[in-house]
Length: 193
Figure 1 (spheres, rainbow, N blue to C red):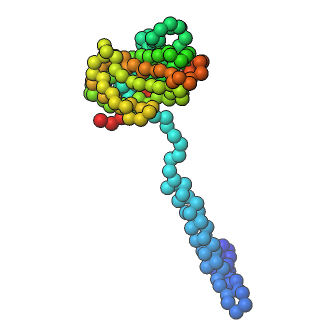
Figure 2: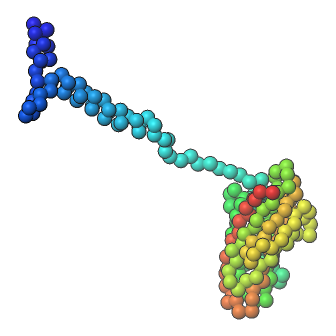
C-alpha cells in the first residue's frame, strides 16, 4: 500500500503553463536549498573569532620605591611642612603638592631603584605648572644614575644595574608666580636600551 502511494507521488507533476516538473525533483531542490542555507548559517559560527579582552600587567624593573619613606620635598629656607608627595602603587608615577612663593626653591627627592640585572634607560616625564622652572639631577650620594634633558618636561636617564639612590627635581618659581599651592606630577617610563 505504501509502495502505491510512493509511486503515485513520484509520478505527480507540477505544471506552470506548458512546463511540468516532477514533484520529487521540486522536493529535492527544496532540500538542497535548505541544506545550503543551513551551511551558510553554521559557517560563520564555526569560523568566528574569540572576542573579549584579558588584562595584562607588565612591571618594569626601574621604579620609584613605593614603600620608601625617603621621598621628600626639601626647601632651601623655612616652611618645611608645606609640601606632600605620594608615589603610585606600581612605583611608576608621583604627585607632589607644594606651597611656593617667589624666591623659594624646592627639591623633590625621589628614591629610584633598578631592580633588574641589567642597566636600563628611562624617560622621566614631568608636568610642571607654568611659572615654575624644573631641573633634574642625580643626588650627590647616588651612583650609577646619569640624565640628560630632552624637552622642557622630559629627561632621558641611564640607570646601572642594581643602582639605588635619589633623583632630585629642583623647582624654582619665576618672578611673576602667584603665591599658592602647586601640583607637580611625573612618571617614569622604562624604554628599550
